[in-house]
Image 1 (cartoon, helix red, strand yellow):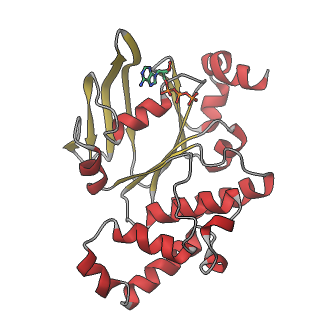
Image 2 (cartoon, protein in one colour):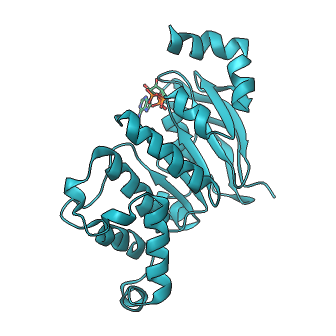
Length: 246
Ligand SMILES: Nc1ncnc2c1ncn2[C@@H]1O[C@H](COP(=O)(O)OP(=O)(O)OP(=O)(O)O)[C@@H](O)[C@H]1O
C-alpha cells in the first residue's frame, strides 16, 4: 500500500504556475526532507497536502484514499498533522496543559473529562513529553520556554493528536547550535514511530535526520533519494547546494 502519493500535482496563482507536474511517493515510517531554494514551492506543496490550498490539477492519495481538494479539517481528521514555523502555544498555560489542550482538540469534551483522568492518557502525555524532550518542563508556563523548547512543545502538541503523517515547516529555524543538536536527537526518536515530511533549509540538520531527500526547483521535482545521492547530483549542486555553499 502506498502511504502518501502525490501525482502530477500543479498549482497556479492567477497565471503563475508555482507547482508544475510534481510527483513523489512518501514511504511509511521514513523521514523525508523537502529542500530547495527560496520560492521552489515547498510551503505550497505542504499547503496542498494539508488542504490549506486546493490544487489546480493532479492528485494526492493518502493510504490509498484520494484526499485531493478535501477541507483542511477533514485531512487533519484523517491523520495528517502539521507544525508551522511560527509557534502557536498557549503562553499562560503550562507545558502539561498545552499538551492536554492539543489532545482535547481531537476528541469530544465529554470524552476528555474521563480521558484526562485515565492512566492511559497520563502515560500518553508522559511518552509525548519524553519524545519532545520536555519531561522536566511539564509544570513550566509555556511563555517562559526558550525558542527551542517552544518548538518542541509544538511538536508534542501535534503528536498528542496521534497523526499518521507529521509535516513540519523549518523546525530548527532560529535555534541555537545546542538546540539544533537536541532537535536532532528528538527527530531520531520521532523517526522510530512516525512518518515525517520536514521542510528545511539547514543542510547540516538534513544530513543528520533524513532517510530520503526531495529537492524542488521552480515547482518541479529536481531529485529524490538518499542524502549522499542528492549531494552528489550535479544538477542539485548547481541550482541549490552550490548556491547554499557560495
Ligand atoms: N498565495 C499566493 N499567491 C501568489 N503567489 C504565491 C502564493 N503563495 C506562494 N506564491 C508564490 O509561489 C512560489 C512558491 O512559494 P513557496 O512559499 O511555496 O516556496 P518555498 O519553497 O516554500 O520558499 P521559501 O523557502 O522561501 O519558504 C513563490 O514564487 C511565491 O511567491
